[in-house]
Amino acid sequence: MAEVPRLEIRNLRRSFDGRAVVDGVSLQIMPGQVTCLLGPSGCGKSTTLRMIAGVEMQDSGEIYVDGKLICDTVTRVPPERREIGLMFQDFALFPHLSVEGNVAYGLRGSRAEKRARVEEMLGRVHMQRFIDMYPHQLSGGEQQRVALARALAPQPRIMLMDEPFSGLDNRLRDGIRDETLSILKEEDTGVLLVTHEPDEAMRMADEIALMRDGRIVQQGAPYNVYTRPLDRASVAFFSDANVRRATVQGALAMTPFGRFLAPGIADGTEVDIVFRPQHVRIDFDRAGVGPVPTAVEGTAARAVVERARFMGNESLVEFRLDHDGSVMKSTVPGVFLPQPGTVMWLRVRRDKCFVFPAGMMG
Ligand SMILES: Nc1ncnc2c1ncn2[C@@H]1O[C@H](COP(=O)(O)OP(=O)(O)OP(=O)(O)O)[C@@H](O)[C@H]1O
Image (cartoon, rainbow, N blue to C red; front, side):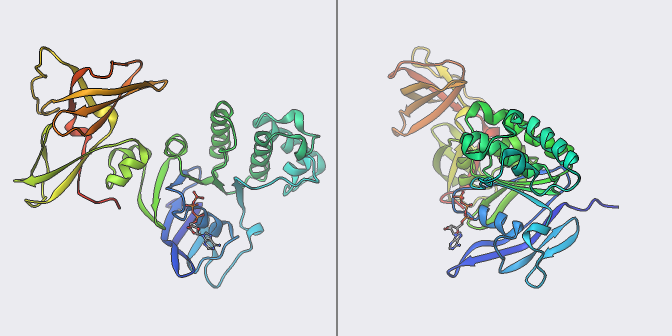
């Protein structure tokens, strides 16, 4: 028998003041699966999450948990009976309850059972020694970790998380994030995590649902969404992107980097050739001569270093192309800091670039 999704939403819609903020969103999350709803600010991610949580009512569409309808426009299971855990950025702890009281809230069983579960959960977020303290005695990051323990303690079937790690400093964030993921996977929870940070989505998600203007525009494994972007906006959302505009003639687009294939695109159409800085290949100038053209990397374009910055894991070098003075960015692993004014030759890997009709920003 086919496995039943932990969470399924069908065609959710919600408008505010006549504007569709969530415009027909459907998705399924299987047990133990983490799906990230990723998109720019204001695209409708939080509204989607709030409807699933039951704190916002949809105009239309259905929500199912383990195959059971919990909400459409007729049926409406109240939020507290949906067996959905919530971990929102502004989801405050109860100020009058101790850390123990907060984490035990919503737990069933004997006092001893509750205490054992509270200790286990606090241990997992490294907060055991704060068990008798009150929220006002904790830092923001510590409060967030207690909130996480509280959300995980009742073993919800589904966990909805809205930028849950954003208040933590970098060093803590990675550890808590990984620990949270492993708890959720162990307990077969389905997770829907909202973020506007591609790095966070890539790190956490089994599947990314890319959202824009109230719709899911692309969905798949992080690798697929990153390497097969839908349009120029999707490339630019994940990383810096270089763009060359060109006109198609005979299914080819001519650029200072040589020809690019543009199959199926009509003569005279303008296209944007989009490529990430890490796919620009740099060669040194040898007495005014660039490297020999190849099928994989095309023709080299002469360029001058504008500036170079060390970024930690890599260096970012900005070039100005001789051809038209446009700026191209390139990243190189490690330390590579050529002097401004240095002449170099740039090539673009054909298998790593994308050709989209011009102006297709989604
Ligand atoms: N109660 C409301 N009344 C009117 N407009 C609303 C309401 N709630 C949300 N909106 C609008 O709906 C749009 C989507 O909001 P939402 O919070 O879902 O976006 P988001 O993708 O989660 O953004 P962010 O990452 O900034 O939180 C925004 O333009 C917001 O102003």
